[in-house]
Length: 76
Image (tube, rainbow, N blue to C red; front, side, top):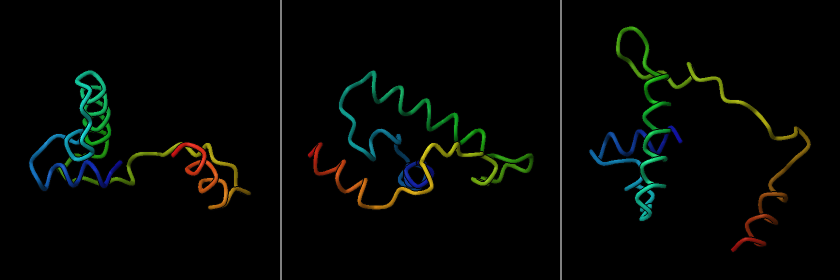
């Protein structure tokens, strides 16, 4: 997500445009989340520090790439 936000800042467009989200409401929701995360990453000096965000880890430690490959194959 941080990469999408950084790309949108660089190209001066909305994060939803980077991903080509056509649905207006979905694009709005995605942009709102991106803005929220970006604002949480800003320190007092106005610098973006992504490590300020504590990413919740819901993935089990014993998972590997095989699980995501199977998921992608099943949903493509």
